[in-house]
Length: 112
Length: 220
Length: 267
Image 1 (cartoon, rainbow over the protein chains, first blue to last red):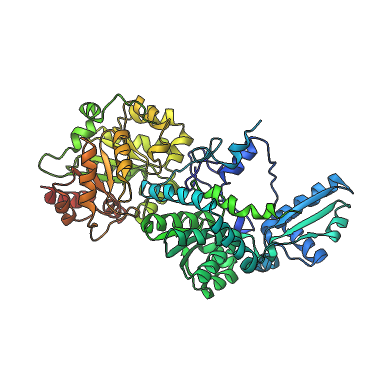
Image 2: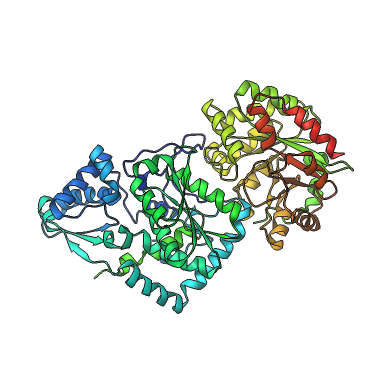
């Protein structure tokens, strides 16, 4: 239970919310929205974890190959898109919601 | 089999067992009012027309779907398409939600808007709509995030928003939301809280989702 | 939603230690507050025992939570200090038991997440065993209160709900019908923390609540000064003083000095 709704949260056995770390400030949050928790439990959506390093690599790849600098948040999705693409092979189709641009993240990427 | 209605209309503010309204009593009246006004507003053709106008001329919608052919080639040949929300005004999908909620704030007669922000994109979107509609704007941001997203802090300030540094807890998004909720508890009668993600008490998760579904509706 | 509509609050109040302890008898009653484990476990027990015998009618003991949405800076800081020193729900219940053994009715105040994580049925049983009289959960409005409140009641704990200045009259009615022990009126729109003045509309709110309950009515949030006690005498049964006491504990002082000063203004 965090910020007014019941959902999956990162907590210890005593219900204390635990610190998080993400290279992406927009993802640095110890919970998920309640509808995501529901879609997860009902197996309508599969949720996957992506590391900081994988997101950074996808950020750089998209920037260099497409001339589009993605925000670090959707860079996590781009990494997973790569895995799924290799799985599907030619003929497969993937749509990624590129939720924002990455200008704001240049400092984090340079430092990382 | 999941009842479709359970997905689109949370029952008693819940998606299955998830969701609800676990907030201090001070906010309960405001949440009940917000839910009523949102459902009424969503069904109002005039509102939808106004929203569509802002989406087109202010946000720059519809956004294109782009074929990322070189990424596709790199990853073995499957087609990869990008829905270009990065091309929205202010550089992210956040404005889709902020415009809709700002219109709602004005409908409810609120002159002051507060928001939380992590990376700064939702803060920038909120500061932007407040400038556009002439609303007073305060954004809560963790101290750690202000350091790593200094460019967005400058943008918000130029847009006329007050950016409040949150020094409690881990100084990130979680603590910014907590502090914004405390502000709302204090100023609930004059203030509208624009939450930027599908979190928080009902009806926020449903409302933010409804305002972002335009991304999916534009397919094809 | 109502666990047992047949049971009237008046019938419950006959059995409730809290209801008898907090009913004003000419004098305004004083309810203290401290955070379990603040500044550390040992001192928290000492301070609690001193407060228990200082003339207060009841003592609220906070169980720290990492994200206390209803609390201002003083209680946030106390909770964080307690957590840094390793305070847990179990540890807080031990402190509550030690303090309750002095005879003062103890009310636990915490957020819903630690109760859920501890298991609400186990929490109810352990709190009752510790001699606790009641529980306040500020982020649990009446609409969301079942089944947790049912479990708390089943071990004879009182469940105290809050009324805020923004609460509509039909909600006041529902909150009063869900409350046992006493009804807690939040005097202002805001978080906990001492204020210079109490808001103008406070007396009207207390009067509205009285129309809907025969339980004692306590006023809290912002109350810290003798003149606040004088203002509340006659309209509330009891005043809850939290942040002012916690500040005193935080600076290493003796909070019973403040309690005695406030008690003088209650008479």
